[in-house]
Length: 315
Length: 200
Ligand code: FES
Image (cartoon, rainbow over all chains, first blue to last red):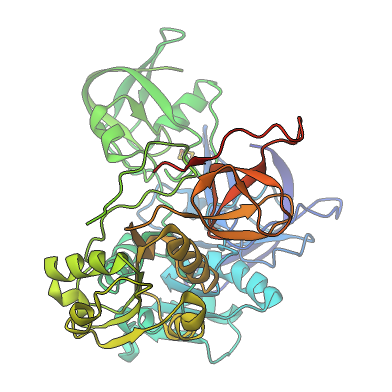
């Protein structure tokens, strides 16, 4: 991934848990434009480790003057978001990749229905810019626990087709109502917790929607787990993956060159062949098919782990 | 009756599985001639599929009218031709919402035209099912003059618009709902292979 050093020019708390960051080129040079739903990966030098986290861009896709992201602090997470909140200050230089989009709008759609849960609002903020330029019909449904926690509120224009569902105000999202009566050619996009994505898929199936009209993005962060050993077929080297480290990070720490993009089990870039597996791969990705998972001949190092006697991968 | 098994071909050539019921739900059904038998079979397998169905039948010489009426679909129309029913069909698509299923049955010409119309109206391809019954005549587009010749039963055939002799290809355009016909004697004008009945 191509990364460039960008300067943090703004840092603003949106809610007690969510902070907005703005990055600009140190010389004021324009940054590559992107499309709504794109993300960047931010590198965080973190002790002796390099963490790389993917964040959706929330700024306007046609504005190259800077990139903005919103980071939710996960106190029980692996530390990336705590680092962003606690250690990053305006004026700092950070390595930020070029934008990459795994959650773009389907431009054939007649209408777009966007469903956001919590911090899942972020990719839609850039899509809203794109949708209003394209002047196509859309509606946004944004569910949050409370107004105080709804970081997206600052950015949302007050429009009749932007709906807030605040659960502590007793106005929960009714997926059946959202999905019925939509005109032909409507596409639905969901971003948020896995439970929300599953609920939308379920409701859509019950209402007869074909799967091709549904899109979702759930960025996984690499789940922690027990440490495990992995052997690299090409060099014979054996590495140990730490409990809070991903296999991808362990490979990177050993200076093994491996392609990646989303670092969340969604893009397929890091797919690696398994040459021997005595044990069980914990497939945590959204990429491999069920058959691939069962065969244990492939692994996605950005999120998946292993338990057993021997894992040899083709790296 | 007359369910045709087509010989294996390139990926572009549509294949038609027997219609499979998605149960009671908003449904548009359009069939011509022998296609009515496919709808009758479907309804026999799952009568609930008729509960919210809007059925359009173009008999074109076949006679399933008594049995089709007896299905008691929510809405039922008979029409003398596809052109005569196009306005009603378009209106049905315009009023339809996501979740609506489209069942097409009959000749390839009808299936091609009706599917193209539905896709243009925004119906997802996955919501369309088609079963071929009856004549294997094809709807062909001349790739040279772009004119469409209906009911082509021989290969090669003469383009009804520009008069070129065209070879019947299996290459299908979903947007146009037609197969592609390509000049058969472009290199050696006048050297035309013998005309044969097209095969399934
Ligand atoms: S980096 Fe995208 S799936 Fe691993």
